[in-house]
Image (cartoon, rainbow, N blue to C red; front, side, top):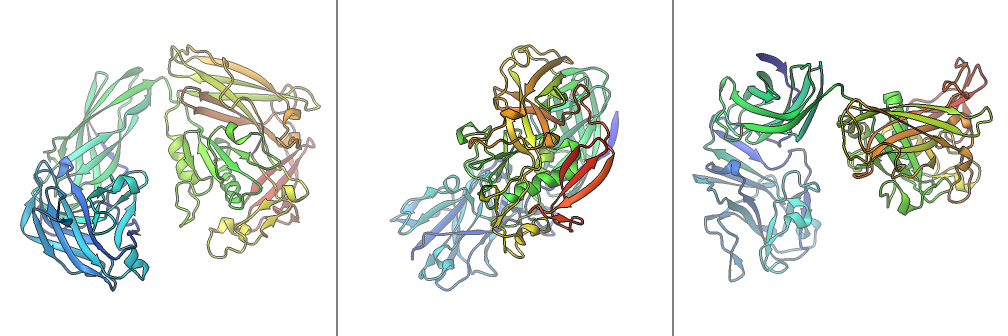
Length: 616
């Protein structure tokens, strides 16, 4: 059986360009878009900087040329590029044992081209450059070494260092500093069709549906990778899939792309292995020694949809925190009921937890955690603060793709017409069995539209006057004062059961396709902050968040959110809107929201109820 599918490609490699010769390729150890940081000892001295080339993928290849990035400024010069089997010193001076050549800087780089290509043996080698600093008056002289920060170790730290004064011995400065030294190589000696494959540890599918698989292909050859023939085997099934790999061009050594394909549907559940073999590239035999990969694959009766729980930590005294409120509102506008956000206030009159009792660490705000395992920013996501933009949606979507063994249904009712208490009932529907689990329920009351008078209710705002620095949706903060009185707070956690979960709320033995019920009663009158502030201001603006937590890992397995209705119904009746009013964040009524500004929409319904929602 052969299936043809179009791959979803995301280039993961760096900046590469074919040299024109079919068997010669370019390699870079970094993305071309990564900006350099400059490192130095602030001293007048000689520098020796090296990188290690020892990955198995390089063994047997030859280096035709090497390029390093340097600073061109007065007082920095006498550049040399060298190679060595080991990092050694002779009378405190670097002593390379392969080659050393004087080079000149040109447009921020130094390059050495070998007369005879240098072969990379199984033991690898060091490549490096040396230079002297004779002045330390300017920043470029004090920090003359080009580096790239690599906090996550995505590329592997690679920064060896020796200097004539400060570092008298060779040191491995990569892992310590989280830096890598950027460089480029021209390589030869590789095969034409040579593609490796890597899989994630686990994949999941549902009976009657195709199972999506994402694999990472890496090109170690010199030919363009147009197609790949992927053979698969799992739970007694096997087949062959032809994958379109357009986007892996020639001359780009070790460029990786993520390809997506689907395994055919099956009518039976299973729990076993998945074997993948990239048998051919461009219709020719794949010559890679790493063309196979294995993973775990489970097929369930269905696949529950994960709703990530985004918990934000904020505070009225935190001047940068208002971007989190905007982030949560934009997520609610974009994803509707699929988005569940909770805002924990810190060190202000809406705080319900001491810092040591927070569900997740939050020593500084703003900060957010998704499912209590993924730390991020409630507005930026993983986008650096230096280039601010809305990015929490990308992190949330990645989290939403994680497998979850259960989904939740929630009903919640007021126990009486006086809104004394809320009875919340959940049904957890599992697809996976467990013999000794410790899943627990967590319930959180959240309220929209919290506001009050006085300085304690004012929101700090460091964005005030920060013209031309922030995206359009934060412009209203730029135009607002440093302290915003009458600010309206949404998604505020006003009451919570034990953040670690209610012990015994779900059984330890879970059956596949089993459903388990739990209920609890939540009393808004108990929603009192650490400072004694009564937080339940309006029953119509209160919602219930219910979540399953795996108490052994702290991971939120799934969550849902609902509003209590009229007693005994679970539904707010008379939902027809009879009046709509808009207010700005200072509580002043306005005709309509301005473009790019957040406003508060208050709707009055036929049954007399009112709903408050933040809109843009």
